[in-house]
Length: 284
Ligand SMILES: C[S@@+](CC[C@H](N)C(=O)[O-])C[C@H]1O[C@@H](n2cnc3c(N)ncnc32)[C@H](O)[C@@H]1O
Image 1 (cartoon, rainbow, N blue to C red):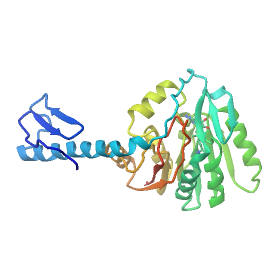
Image 2: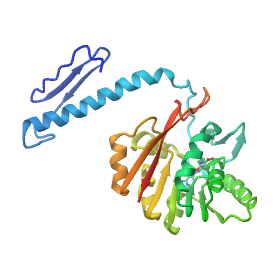
Image 3: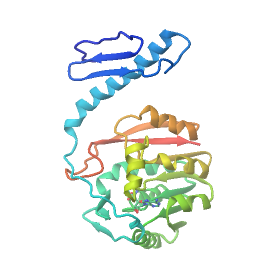
């Protein structure tokens, strides 16, 4: 770490780091906060937590200048998604003025499809979008493929696409995953790539949760056979946060992480700014 100076003194109430470009002061407001039996235990774990924050800030300082410029996202109209127009244009899907899916995600979708089809069994997919992952899942070969899609027009496109593969066992289920998934059976693989469909979902799923798919974790675990795998759009660039890992381990017995790099979101991409994303394989 490029610390100009580091103040590691843990006075009773404070942890402080002074670096060249940033200063962090952590103030304990309750003396029993992180109340380990021994003072040095509290000191040790708190310093580790602050060191992690410092490392992450240094990392962001290095990579942020290379983010694509991006446009500002427009607000989603309340309650409209299901019946909204879906426009397929120039390799992207637009609904409610949102860039829902763009084809620079092809390498990511291909890798996620390989992960979810490892057993070539029954696969549940949430969100059809451009149908890229759906196509890769079929190319990998599966026993059955169930797709849940909320937008009526996209669901129609998905049914037309399924009709071009008459020998494949593909079912398109219309509706919210929140309502439809509890009614479905068990699967060997679950793939999640939905999108926030209201400002409330954007606030909860994108801004507050540890990862955009976190609200789906219990549903995914409930639909998987033992040993089945779950993969999802992670919104994580090169590693998973501790919050994210803890959330996975609440519902899955183990997970692996890999990075798909070489991604090229265009300069006006509103939903991803950088050239890599993590792919997770979570095992039930
Ligand atoms: C990012 S796209 C999926 C992209 C897809 N993986 C591909 O490769 O083209 C998200 C899709 O999820 C759908 N969706 C959003 N929220 C949903 C929900 N709650 N339940 C089901 N589908 C949803 C959207 O209408 C959209 O078609």
